[in-house]
Amino acid sequence: MGLIKFRGILSVWKGRVIPRNAVPWSDHWTVRTAAIAAHLRWIGPDSLMLVGDSLFELVPPHPLEGLKVVNAGFGGATAANVYASIASSVVMSALKANPPAKAVIQAGTNDSKTGADPVAVAEKTMAICSLFRSIGAEPIVFAIPPIEEKKTAFRSASVASAINDATRQACVRSGVPFIDPYVAIRGSNDVTEDGIHLARGAVVALVDAIRAA
Image (tube, rainbow, N blue to C red; front, top):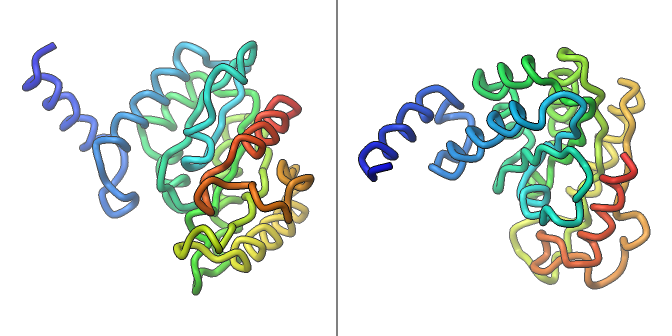
């Protein structure tokens, strides 16, 4: 395929996928959304869909061997961005045609900044759950991991904790399972590589929780 033709295909996808004001726009987002729709067509019904940000996108595929997994993680996504990606016409039409059995949702890490509204983040996560319920898929919400402030100046540990508290309460009200994959390692000093992205031990804990879901 020539470069000009490839760029033309990307341009078409940009017009169809997600409004520019809904996500941090880049070709990465375009290609990820197209890949998610394609994977749903192939893996499709009875699969497990991972819905979130880079913490899911960066999970290597080999620890999940044997599972029918569609990884819909988008690097940099806030809870609102995740909602926009799933609600987009491209992904939603693929979901309706080949709905997964379950959707594991982990959103809010990129919202955990000073001044963020934890309740609003939790409400957006519940809106994502509603999208999956509307197609007959079971939503399961994972807590976001702890933020290690000594390693990053871009996120707040207290806000992340407040987001988890608000999301847990919203899940109870809505009857959605809420699971904390990181409960056994919270308080340790090596949950993340850079304050945000998971170190190997935390990835193992996350994979174990995905398999148990």
